Each structure stands twice: as C-alpha cells, then as structure tokens.
Image 1 (cartoon, rainbow, N blue to C red):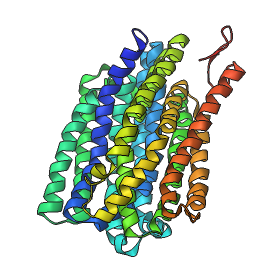
Image 2 (image 1 turned 90 degrees about the vertical axis):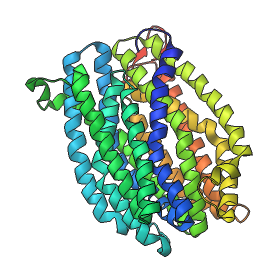
Image 3 (image 1 turned 90 degrees about the horizontal axis):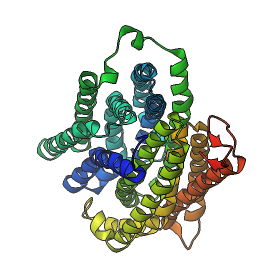
Image 4 (image 1 turned 60 degrees about the vertical axis):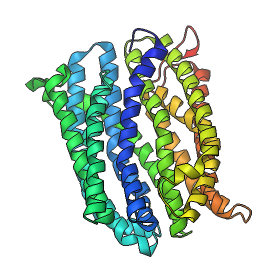
Length: 452
C-alpha cells in the first residue's frame, strides 16, 4: 500500500474487509433474527442483555491482536522481514494465553455481572446460559481475529473473508437446526455460534501457515522476543483498554435500558444490532486506513498518509449521506426483520431515527482513529475510551431523567456520546497539527509543518 492511487488502494483493500465484517456481524445477527422470529421477543432480549458484557470480555483480548497487526504493518512497510515474522509469532503467544485466562474469569463472573446490570428476572436464565457458552468460544474468536489482523497487515484482506463466509453460512444452518428443529432456544444459538467460530479460526490460521511465506518460520523466528512483545503490549494494551472502557460504558447504558422492562430491552437489542451493521463500513475504513498508514509510516511516505486521511474522510461523508435517509424512511421495515411485536417495532423505528442523526460524528471517530492507530498513538485510544465511559455513565441518566424525553433519552444519549467522542478525536487531530513535532511516537514533518 506504499505505491499507487490512494483512494483505489483503500477502497480495494476495504471491500473484502467490509464483506468479512458484515459476515462476522451475521453471527450475532442470525442468532437474534432466528431467536426473535422462532422463539420470541423475550428470548431476543435475553441475548441482547449480554451484548455489552460479551463485548467487554472480547475487547480485553482483541486489542492485542489489532496492536500486533499495526506493528507488523510498520515492519512490513520498512521491508524488515525478520521482524515481521517475529511479530507474528510473539503476537500469537499473547493471543493464545490471554483469551484463556479472560474466558475462564468471564465464565465465572457471568451471573454476578448480569445481576449487577439489573437484567430483568424473566430474561436472566437464558442470558446466563447464552453468555457462558460464548465465553467458552472466546479463544476461537481471538485466534480468528489474530490471523485476520496479521494477514491484513501484510496486505491480504481476502483470505480471512473466504473462511468467514463459509463459517457464517454454517452458523446459519446450525442456528436453524438447534433453535428451530431441536427447540434449544437461546442455548442452541450460542452452541451454533461457537462451533462456527471454531471452524473459522482454525481454517484461517491453518491456511495462513500453509500458504503465506511470512507464516513459514524457522526456529529462531519462534523465539520469544521481549522487545517486539513489548511493542505489541504497549500498543495493544491501550487498544484493549479503550475497547474495554467502551464496553463498560455500554454496560452502564444497558443498566438504564433494563430498568424500562422487556419491551425496551428487545427494542434496544434490535437497534443495537442495526447499529453494529452501520458501524462496519466506518470500522472497515478505519482498519484499512490504519494498515495503509502503518505501511506508509514505516516507509516514511508521509504525504501519502495525509492524502489517505483526506480521501478516507470524503468516503465517510458519502456513506453517511446515503444511510441517513434510509434509516429515517424505512425504520419500521428494518426493525421488523427482528421481531413481529408491534410495540417493539414502533419503539425501535423511532429509536434508529434518533441515532441516525449522529452518524457523521461516528464516522469522524473512525477516520481519525484509523490514522492515529496506524501511527502508533496509543494515548488517543485511552482518551477516546475515557470519554465514552464518562458520557455513557452520565448522559443516559441525565436524558432519561428529563420528563419531556424519558425513555427516548436512551437513544439520544447514544448519539450525544458519539458526538462527544467525535469532537474529542477532532481536537486530538488538530492538537497534533498545532504542535508540529515528534512526540509519543507520532511523526510530523518539521519542514512543512503538516501533520504526518
């Protein structure tokens, strides 16, 4: 990604990742649709009640994979093949050990955390069952994300997609089998997801080892390297902490939602699934921009980094302008995919009309994050996560406490927190431009005075 037309490279690299991310979202989306349609809104709510907690546990692991991918892309941009292999190996050690520890702890803490969030009693049993099954599959999710992050860092965004599509189709078939045929309800949806994740992880990793030359290592490449592992931890740690802080903030919001009862929980679950889909183009653009930035930063091609930022921002604006009218005009039809109950549909449709007003701020978060992550700015990750935690602890309580807003403050608070995070990202970007120096691993060109 250090040569050729910037916009063409980013778009071509993004498309396989976007398709892959959408298919990855289908794991949970299919669970929600099949459970919601075949079992009911209460079962759908029990899955939704686990979203923020599951996100927290997965976030603790996946930040290290993303951090390792960024470091690998920088070595790859420099042409340092030995360090690329060492980074792949040392990130693997972290991504095998840490998820096992987190998975065991999360399995044991499932019920206490869900009680702490005031999960409605009628949803509790199914929520605990579903989440504990997901915790058992945490190692498989982490291994797949590790393999795909390494391959993307090396410029291959297509290989992870092929295996993900297969496993997603498998997940859909298993969901129908376990939920509809065997009548296993929420538990069946969880089992189907874990089996599919297992296949996706080992198929992708096995293919990479057999076919990608950077995964063909000698004994010396497999040795533990303290310096490289330290780089992965220094960047991946703050990324994990950022994702975890965001997850904790989502848990605070879930607690507010739970207080409004099963209908609100079901509507919030449906709108959250839709938002996860909306996040994917932004997130994919951010990941592509991080790889693009990391490779060009490693190759010291700073003008290409700036160009990537400008053109990615334009792409984000175009997507936002397309999605806004879709959500405003077709909200009921979209919510109806998940449930049949009219009260849930009406609430969810109004909710996504509220949150879609803030999509532009969501896009700003992801574009700025992509550039800063590619440059190795771990401090921004912490700053952004902290803003989301403060926002989601304070804003929902404040908004829902207003008599004129009430319940709808749940979704207004989502948009306001996006706005706060987007503003923070923008200020961070311009603070770098103002200083025009090399600080904290972030590069600037003193001669031109422009942000690198």
